[in-house]
Amino acid sequence: MAKITVLIPAFNEVDSLEQLHQEISDVASANQLDVEIILVDDGSDDGTWYEMNRIARDDPRVQCLKFRRNFGKAAAIQAGVDIASGQYIVTMDGDLQDDPAEIPNLLDAMEPEFDVVSGWKKQRQDPITKRWPSKVFNWLVSFLSGVKLHDHNCGLKMYRREIFEDFRLYGERHRFIPVLAASKGWKVTEAVVNHRPRTNGVSKYNWRRLPKGFLDLITITFLTSYNERPQHLLGGLGLLSFTAGLAGMLWMAIYWLLRMTWFEDWAPVHQRPILLYSVAAMLFGGQLLSIGVLAELLLSNSRETTTIAPYSIAERIGTGLGNVQPAAADSDGRQASPATSDKN
Image 1 (cartoon, rainbow, N blue to C red):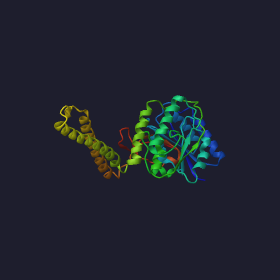
Image 2 (cartoon, rainbow, N blue to C red):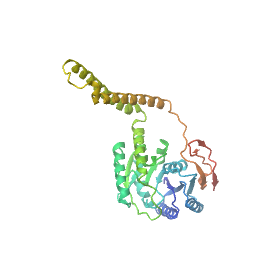
Image 3 (cartoon, rainbow, N blue to C red):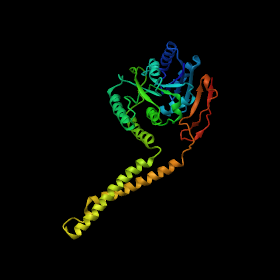
Image 4 (tube, rainbow, N blue to C red):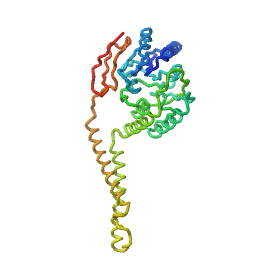
């Protein structure tokens, strides 16, 4: 039986963790699953870390990480992946809306031909103010990336461990793991999962995350489609703009000749708006072409980069963590030594 890592980022989820841990244990026992549980405290201030301490003390399968501050869900998932030992990794939220009973179903959907199974909350238990923006976002991601999923936002997903060797998570990239995996050739599918009403805590998502998510979507689209050939996008747009401007300028030259010879009543060239638009289009196109060349030069000189973890660990708990020393970074991104308090 393959080992499964259940990875749970938590931010102020003190009231949910005990029940969630019990449900995962019951599912593992009922289905004879070999599981480890990784809990990541993403800068909580409500006693979440103390609850994780208690759970880890009573269950040797549990490992816990405590961040020095809130680094975000993507960083929490990356930190958990860095110490995971399971062949499969299941991510789920810590608010009890994701149902651990779906883990065997995700495993069935995974084998044998897929590498990522994304949950689809077909009957979503959220207010309409969250459902409709999510529908729009999911449509945009599917349209721009070509990865057709109903629910890119679902926190309940299963991955083969190896896919995380192809990319690092930071910012809001956790939303786009299936897109990133598909861009590397991994096979992605989805499975309908049970979504439960919220009973504890408050939602961590609000309208301020929408523009961030859209900007990250643009970045992911560029990275997955043009990461190895940025000039194809920037240069293509630049060439189109420059050509349109050049065509406008040629028309202005012909216009000037016609006015000087036969149509003296026509307005002077400098009074025609198309002259200004054509000049602006040529300048903009030239700038895009130049940026594309610079992007190609930067890419060719940055194939080997130093990987710095997008998080910093304050404490670690769990029997499997004694020899694990993942790279850490402080809040301004500089390399930092772990300097942690290991408690086994």
